[in-house]
Length: 168
Image (tube, rainbow, N blue to C red):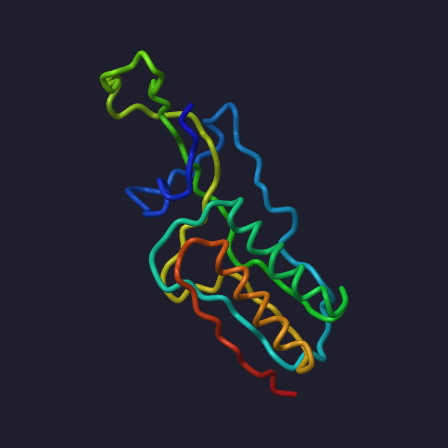
C-alpha cells in the first residue's frame, strides 16, 4: 500500500487547486482552532515563526506545530499566552494511486496525467511569511522560544523566529 507523504507535496507545482465544490469526498481540515490562549493587551513580546523558502505545508503538519508550541507555552498556564495560526490550508492535494503490489513487477503507466482523488489540504507559503504568532509576557519568553523551536521541527522546512517588543 502506497502511503501519502508530505515530502511528495512539499514543492508547490503548477496552479493551486482550491475548487472544493467539484470534489465529492472533500478532506476535512485537521486544524482544531486557529487562535488559543488569552487575548489581552498587556503582553510584552510578539514572537513570529517565519518560513524561509517557497513551500506547501500540509494541514496535519500545521496542526502538529500549533499543538507543540501551545503545549510548551501552556506550561506557564493557559492564560499566560495568546497564539494565532496565520495561514489557512486552501490547496487540495490529490493522489493518483498506482498499483505497487508484489505481482506488479513493471510500473503501471495508465492514465498518465490523471486527476486523482483528494487526500488532504495544504497551505502555500512564501519566504518571509508568518505561520504562527504568539504574544507572551517577559517571564514566559524563554518558554515561548522553546515552543517555537519544537513547532518548527514539525513543519519540515527551515524557519526563523522574529521577536518584537510591544510598545506600551
